[in-house]
Amino acid sequence: MITFNYETSFKLKDEESLEIWITTVIEDKNFELGEINYIFCDDDYLHKLNVEFLQHDTLTDVISFDNSLGKLINGDIYISVERVEDNSKDFKVSFEDELHRVMIHGVLHYMGFKDKSVDDKIQMRNAENKALSVISN
Image (cartoon, rainbow, N blue to C red; front, top):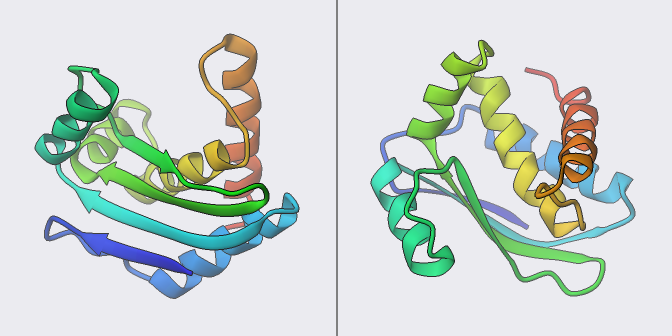
């Protein structure tokens, strides 16, 4: 089950189709959907979490807390809508494309993808691009 929670006035346009897309990505990689909670928030909200839980005094677009058990995907994914909007402008992509990338990025972490080394970042980006190629905007 996927739930979408909002700590800002932002609301997703089509929760149902996004839930189907995320579930498909999970199942295509031979994992099973447990419970994923998306929490959409602002920079201040996510910054506080970043400092408190990760000891990073920086802004970020996404923080994911992984509660997966083996192949059963569970976790909480916090997304700063403000960061996504700024990043979409910086990367010259639509807000929706950047939002979808960040949404699936957290899920890919739960499936073992990393993004610390150069090679890991390439593998993560390839997995993101593959997932994004199947979503209809």
